[in-house]
Image (cartoon, rainbow, N blue to C red; front, side, top):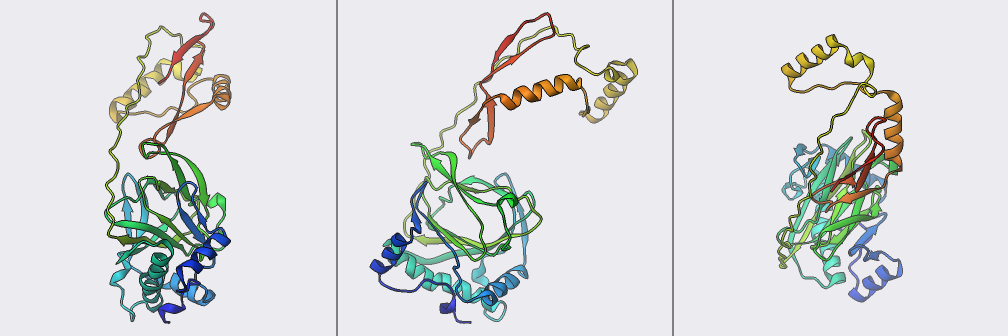
Amino acid sequence: MHAQQFGRCSLVSKQVLRKIIILYGLLEGDPFPHVHLDNFVGDGNRAIHQLEKELLTMDWRRRENDLYTLSQTVDLKSLKATQAPFLYSFRRFLTTSVRSWLSETTGVELTSQVDSTGSVYTNHDGLLPHSDLIGTRHFAFVYYLTDKEWEEEDGGYLQLYSANDNHEPVEVVKSLKPKRNSFILFEVSADSWHRVAEVLTDRYRLSINGWFHSTRKLDPPPINIRTIQRFSPTSMDVDLSDLVVDQYQKPDMVAQVKMFFNDESEVMINDFVEESLNASVLQSLNKTKFSPVGPPSKRLCKKICSLFYKRSKKISEKRLQCN
């Protein structure tokens, strides 16, 4: 199959392409410039199925670190036409037709470097917030080969973040479905923060992704390291007899727990406190407002600004500041 048979993008004039993009609302600037094109490969189900089939037969390597967990192929530039003809043609289509179309549409002079790899996210895989701002990357892209039945409860959405004046991610403002045969493109910048939400299904979130490069090279903004203010715990005498279930107050059980902890350096105790207290705490937490501790690229957690608690019947109410 010839490369030019892939995709619905045609090499027409810059003015016509810009008019099409504006007319159909494909170019969106919130929170940063991006395009989401449905039905990207216009050659029917056979071409898409063959792309998927050839991609799944590639050599996949598991990749896990503090930023992501997924499986990936090597760069598809090493492919030969005889090895995987549809994948080879699709990559040729990206490096020729799509690259020329993108350069014409945006006015950005792109180099011949186009990175492209296959990626698979499955149950509990994900990619934490990042901006892609490395070297000469100018535009990032993803082409999806996921199941047609992929739904929101399956996770794996591409989530776009807003950014503050320090070029730090703030919050997710848009979630894009990894829809089969769709193509997502966005400009890489200090504000192009995004993530792949955790996948919550055993099915494959399969894609071809990479970057178009230019001669532009942006330096990442300086990292503003902020620490979370700690609080000093207050030492108090607390009678736990009314809180802990009777089973764990018996001397023989205390001895067993102590011995286990000495051997393993850890212990997990189920149903440790009275059910009434547990239900009361959960009810209070569900009604409590949590505020995020950011930026999301550094910390994905929330905190309670102030916590009220009671210590037995002798203490009315104490307030503990949490910062």
